[in-house]
Structures are given as C-alpha cells and as structure tokens.
Length: 508
Image (cartoon, rainbow, N blue to C red; front, side, top):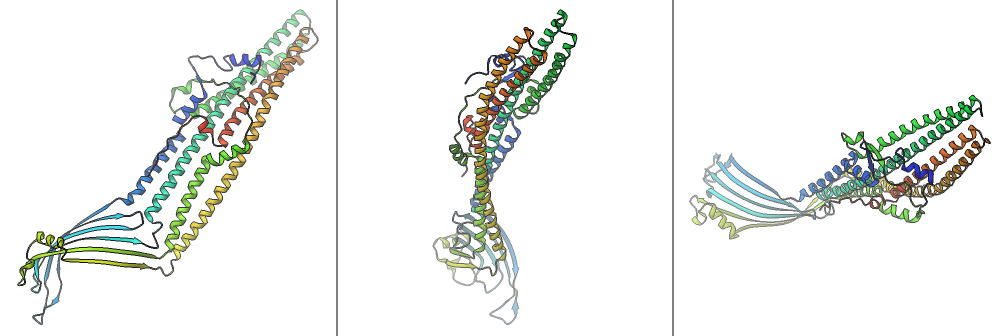
C-alpha cells in the first residue's frame, strides 16, 4: 500500500504528529498496550476472580460424594413397668446401658447410597427375668438404597454438579468476552489517539501556512503592492486555525486519557507521561469474507458460549424439576450380623463373657438378618412439584429463544462489520486521491499568488481544502483500522489473531 504522500510523511516524522522520544514521553506499540490492559484492567481482574470462584464451586459440588463418618456415644437409664410372670403385682425394673455406634455413608453416582454401620453396647438390669446382666451386644451391617424412579436420572448432588459445570462454562465465556471487548476497546482508543496526534500535526501545519501567508502579505504591503487592509484576512484565518489547533490538542489529550484509562493502574506514574503510538496507520486493504466470517462467529463468539451455558443450566433445572414430579420407589438391601455375651442369671453358661466373646459370636455368624424391600412414596397431588416443573420448562424455552436471538444478532453484526470494512477501505483510496489533488491545487494557487494573479482568499481556501483532505485521509485510515478491529471482534477471531492465550482450568 502506498504511503500517505510527501506531506503526510513529513507530518509523521514531526514531533507534534508522532512524537520524538523524550523523557516525558513513552513510545508505545499496540501489542504492548494490549498486554498492559490485559494485565491491569480492573474489569478483567473481576472476571478472572469470577472464573476462579466458579471453579471452586465445581470442586465444592463434588463434596456431596465425600464419605460421611458418624459416631455416637450414649448412656441411657430407663425404668419401664413390666408384669412379672411369677407374681401378680407390677414391678418396675431398671435398665442402664452404655454404647458406641459408628457409621459411614457414601452417596453413589447412581443416586443411591451405601451405609456401613457397627455398634457395641453394655446393658445392666435388675429385672429378675432377664437372661443376661450385664449383656454385651455387638452389631455390624451394610445397607444399599437405590432409587428406581425419582432421583434415578438426577438427584440433588448431580443437579449441583451439573449446575456448577454450566456456571463455570458461563464464567469462562464471560471472561473471554471481557478480554475480547477490552482488546477491541484498546485498539479503538489506540488508533483514536494516533489519529488525534496526526490531526494536531495537520493543524500545526495549517497554522504555519497561515503565518507564511501573513508574512508574504506584510511584505507586499510594505512594497506598496497591496493596501494595508489585506492583512485582515490572513490574520483572521491564522487566529481561527490557532483555535482549531487548541481544540485538536484537547482532543488528543482526551484520547490519550481514554487509552490510559484502559491500560494503566490507578496510581501508576505513567499517568503523567505522554503516550506516543508507534504502530503505522497504513495497512493493506483486504476484502471481507462475509459467509466465512458468519460461520466463524457462530462457532467462536463468546456471547454464544455464554448463552449456551445459560441454556445448559436451564435444561438441568428442567430435568431436576421433572424429577420432583415422579413418585419415589427405592430398592433397599441390607445385611447385619449380631453378637451377644454377658453374665447369665441362672441359665446356661454358654453365653458367658464380655465384649471379646460378643465379637467372637458376631464373627461366627450365629445371629444375622437380611432384608430386601421396595419403598414406595406416592404424593397424592404434588401440585408444588408440577407447577415448578412447568415453570422450569417455560424458562428453558425462554433461554432457547434468547440463544436463537443471540445468533441472529451476531449474524447481523458480522454483516454490518463487513459492510463497514469495505466502505472504509474504499474511502482510503478516495481520500488519498483527494489529498493529492488538494496538494496540486495549493501549489498552483501559490504560483498564481506569487505572480500577482491570485488573492489571499483563494490561497487560504486552498490551504483549508488541503488540511481538510489530510484530515479526511487520517479519518479514513482510522476508520479502516477500527473496522478491522470490529470485524475481528464480530467474527470471534480477535483474541486468537492477537496471539492471546487464555488459561482454561479444567475441573472434574
């Protein structure tokens, strides 16, 4: 691509336009500005913390599958009235017991639960009809409970896990979107500042031309070639251009502060340092691939990842709500062994002993119990669960519509960005041709003026036309730069195109 032209090349080399590196200035490439923003931008810090929190939530959701240990030590004394077999009167025997129980529960990925349990107890009584006192009882057992209807496909634990995964995917998509928007904002601000500094150079050149025209007019007045009143027009034009220069410098300062807001930390010393963009404004004009860009956007845009994560969460919520409508039907299987020993009261001495003997009795499997059962729970109306499920279905359909709407909006954004890119590219050549023509017209008008065949008005008019043409060329280049950024943002390739790597922390 051709350069802007001889005059524009001179502007790019002047301290006012691009800047000569001084102690109070910082020459800044675009990639470095983007890196500073990604490191220090507060919005990105917030998004990164959101991703970290979502990852921790995923880890926390798997805590439902941790083993749960429960221990209970107990002491109990009771006096229960009982009828004696050897007398007609009521007696009230006293019982004292001390025991220790231990259990471990484990939730299973199928929605079932496995429980291991054990117990040991010592019991004394003054009841004369008791067989053992003290008695030492032991027990170990296992129980498996598996849902067959409600909680079979999804339960509280799996709901929490799936929701946490969906939220983490949403947080990652939100971070990706924030990174993309930050990069786009930095690029827009960077090229706006570059254009503002170039515009200041154009304004300064216009002031110099007006000063030269004023000096030439003064010489003509002193030679008697023109009346003194000829000074009014170049002087007025000079002051007008100075006013535009002051406004241009203010615009440049505002553009610089806008870029600093994106790339600098709060108390950084660089706030007092002038930023000089060093990347060239010129770039090769390329045609836009509309269909390819649309397809890329529908795959890469983080906004679609975000609405996809939200839709996934709504689907999980619907499944969980529908689960609540079903009746509960659980299969239960259990097996226990028991041991018993103690001091006999007038009976056989076969069970005499303490805890050791009771555990030995348990290991010999003299006493056991097995159980198989089906437990049915049938809500008679279940109106709350049905209404909740109906509401969840409506919310899921709402999320589906929002996803379709997002795809449609993104398609329109890509097509708009492609149109803007093509228009901006076409404007560059038109602006360049206009600036070259304005340079020729000004040179010709100056020759006529020096030959006494033109006027201050015409020369100043040609100067203004050249300044306007230069500003138009700067504007066209800036618009094309920002259109390239918007095209990359719209089709979802901006992050990859800038070589930015986002760490993806995979969970369970």
